[in-house]
Image (cartoon, rainbow over all chains, first blue to last red; front, side, top):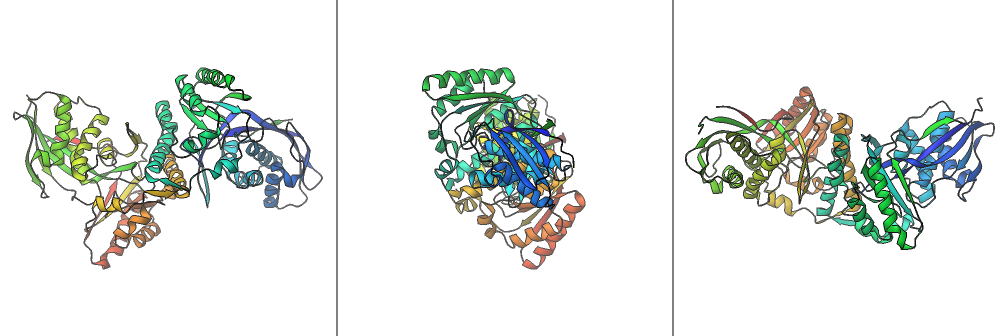
Length: 311
Length: 311
């Protein structure tokens, strides 16, 4: 058995990209969780340490452990062991796919150590088990972009149907993470069970146009499509100064954006790094007087997903 | 003034392409309305004759007249006259864009006779006035594909925002037109004003995937995305043997399909002419015993829109 260590980088992700609520996500170049992983003589998953967040090292209580366990079960060789040390750089509860990054990194790393027996789609399934532990729902809208990179679309869960979308090279994302707590379960509870047909039609017109805009590399069309008539109006109240932030960021040159995942992070897309940095400066201007701690990330769209290097 | 005549071919179209209710349409190579048009010394619009359907030759009561009138008003030269003879090949009420073809052909023809002063998007606006006369609503989901060709997406009406979508060359459409009457107004009345959030999400996942499938030329993804969880279940009752038709056509090789416009026509997409013709044969098998008159059309997707030749 080869006991060589690998280093895994698993990117943060933005789910619920505006109109694409529950279906469209994207990956960031930074921040990301990191892991050192190797094969182990001890069967099953061993988590030797977690740095940067107080998370359990019990594999049954850690998304990395649960996700790898799902992979190993499918792999079907009971003596196989995977050892992992986790460096959490994405704070849990930030709304940029903290648990998804850990789950995604863990399964891509384990797959690599086993000689890549599984397809990306299978890896998404395993990582979704980590999401089930983290939030109670095995959703794919963060793990899919974390594993595949770029923009991804979850067409359906039954059966699971995920496709990568063309991702223009010059697209950047700026994210502000206000250090307040928004529970995914709370954010989901305030959603309405029914929506107006007219709003729903507007939403799927925007989703179609956003996908077309990505393929056409038509930044104006992308900008016009980044609209959410259904979820944002309900959830915006959870985020301090949301509308001011959105208006000012667009004035500063952002194409558009919205709530990342179920918040509290807010993302803005821009064409090019310079614009993305101007948007970051504007976020700073809006948030500085609020008396809320926050962190701002500027990143190109990550187009390769989880990355593995030698440790 | 040049009094040379032109011959205009304006294609039939399918609106409400499955999940893309109210937003995605496509153009057919056949059937289509035809027109002979020329500049005239008599200011305004003159309709010399309508063949193939009992429609008014009064320009204010004919979609061609109304659409050209909207164009001339914008053109702003009161002495300009356009003369038109209309050959209706698409039966009114068929659900494959009969009024849209006439409106689209009329404005593209008039624009040509004036030296093409207007953009396709402006022409769509003028043609929408014809649609307003025909159905009471100035919708664009038939006139946009009729003018632009291929698949089109109407992202928004306020402001009007239309984009052409990539259209794979090997995509064909088979349409059956049962000769029964379904009024657009009735078909719209039975729609619910509110829809379940879960259904709406499923719908916009499908819309995004359909657009991605068109750009990827991924016929399997197109097939899986041709699903309508919202409108089809309500309107299917208006069309004899709808579900049997759909199931059997898919068994015969269709990628999928649905109700064309507000019915009664039903469309099925296929990869390649051979498959489209097998689907046509299956439509015939299903409909022959029903005691309803019907007509079946097999056509490649039209990728150029309205076509002008010398008369």
